[in-house]
Length: 246
Ligand SMILES: Nc1ncnc2c1ncn2[C@@H]1O[C@H](COP(=O)(O)OP(=O)(O)OP(=O)(O)O)[C@@H](O)[C@H]1O
Image (cartoon, rainbow, N blue to C red; front, side, top):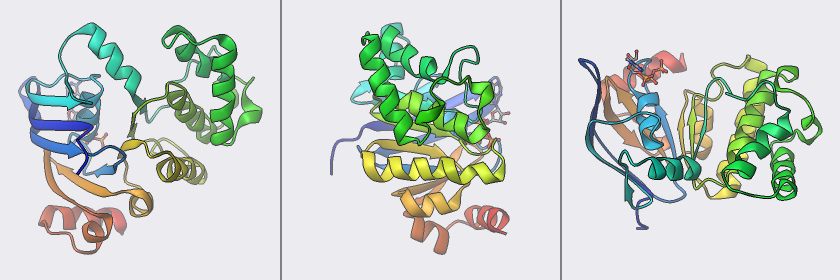
């Protein structure tokens, strides 16, 4: 068994009085692909946002690549470099071209030359199948294309771990597949560790090593996709699956 790349030990978080993460234990192996699902408000986004320190937990330990997360600013910067994140609403800079969105981080944070950053950006735009959109502004692209730019932008930072927070839920139905196809390719070809909050169960069956079900801030059940979907053990998981699959 390889060493864990992410480990959460009895992690708890509150928003005011509201106990949003309850006693979360989770170990992720390098290269593992995990899908997290669960009802709205169950704490899925909060959980993955704690892993790259967009949110702070109050109790327990989160260890990423062997380093326990603290409030050290240098450490937070390093974690954000190694842990890429793709959001529901793309979060691209609207006043920069696609290419500029992709080269900004590598030039300013990774201190790459403009030429190097441009070459890497073009490589990833090829990978997400929109090399011809490099000089456009985000507002000139479809939602699906913008999300593919956001994925390419994360990849340009050469992350070890990628977090996806409902990457297709803001897209029109006809654009969901083009983004999922890119994510499937990434999962199958890159060997990168991926945690993905999504209700796209076809995606989960295709690429996930493990599916995790959360409810009311707790991990209720986790299993391989086949077992998770075909023989869910917990009544709450069964109810949730019956609601989203029908
Ligand atoms: N910054 C915040 N302050 C207070 N409450 C918050 C904050 N962020 C989230 N919450 C609450 O915490 C709960 C969990 O939110 P979270 O976004 O993690 O859930 P989720 O499972 O990802 O839900 P969804 O599927 O709807 O995105 C929700 O009830 C939400 O309203």
